[in-house]
Image (cartoon, rainbow, N blue to C red; front, side, top):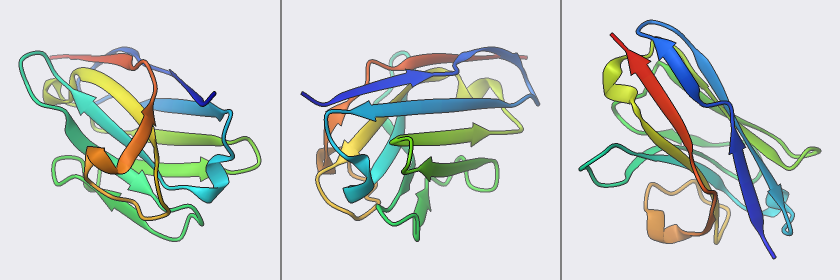
Length: 124
């Protein structure tokens, strides 16, 4: 059984930083792309970032480019999301997901397992 467990969320002031982690078990994440999505109340799930299986390619949503960085440690089966210059508009539940392939897709339907999510709240 594949499990993804996110951690690192919390409350931060605008302009601050947080680092989210997502530990995978039950599947060797090394062989698959991994991604982060977020969902704010009343809004659709939004693509944040994704990284290819070989750590060669990354993909970012327009709203986070230049502020967020996705990375992975394949030895730990873990993916990270370093978030900087946070704004209240970044407030959401952040989900990590493991892809069905190796491409860092922006499409949530290209991911088949999801974590439970971690809340990020940015105060103004």
